[in-house]
Amino acid sequence: EALPLYTYKDYDPKPCVVYIRNEDEANDFIQLLKGPLGFDMEWCFVRGRMERRTALVQFSDEKMILLVQEVIESPDVLKIGANIAGDGKKLYRDFGILPKSLLELGALAQKADNNFKQRKICALAKTVALYEKKTLSKGPVRSSNWEAELSEEQKEYAASDAHCALMVYKRLMKLADLEKRIVIPKELSTDITLPPVPPTLPDRTDNVSTASISTASTSGTDVSSTTALPNDSDFRQFTSPQWLRAYNLWHHSQRPLHEICARLRSPENPLKDSTVISYVIRALQADATLPYSMPRLKELVQLEAGSWQRHKGWIRQQENQAASHHGDA
Image (tube, rainbow, N blue to C red):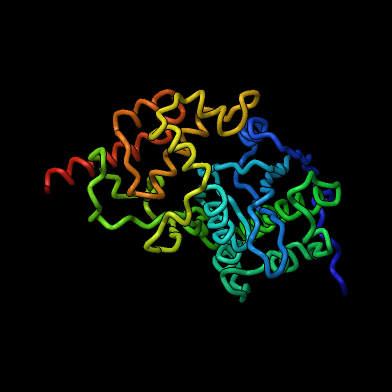
């Protein structure tokens, strides 16, 4: 017997769908979501052509589904999906985001359900069929243009994909509870990280070493896994052109922050200070050979309080490594 088609509209409470194309609105709405979150993303795919950038990111809690076309970095909340580490790596390739707390549904099912015999990375459609007894829509909308403004059909498809991941998660946690199986989702989650740069680096023009491009570890016990991006000899392949533009305007042209914000978008609608600061930091993390002045970097980051809180750990790490590097010289 054919399973019914999955739609978020069948669930109570029926979540509202919020479709956002504006970065500031997305940042506001993301604060309203209560984790854990169902997670999915869409991009245009044409066989035989170069992979396109991520066009849409979906987050869902029980009450609201966000369809976001400005990618949001939200590392403090568990995010649930299928092949979610692959999605996390794509977000880094596309936007320089290093997602944290990514929970693979198949890995959770292996721990929560003794009868689950699938692989750790299991298709979302399979887990939905197993635990929700429904089938996911795989019609032509799946390969439609996700970079254009979304149609109602695209919105429902995208919303259901994120929502079903959360529903499967909740079903598995209830099953684990019934079977008295101890499952701690955070311990099964994955962080996307960059591998450390080898400690022997060429001297930098400003005598500042940035030997590490790893992100700070999560607080608490170190039980979650990490998924590192490829340890190539050339990390610069992951450097976004926008990061380098921000870095060049700040370091080489020595332009003020407000001017960089305007030049990277438009004077009428400049980027946020925190976004440009993040671009500069990401450029330095991705390419350890880029020269810079540590006093100027600290001055830049301290212009925006939230950015300082976010990046001060990495900056202090670079200061300590620079001191150690010069002490060994």
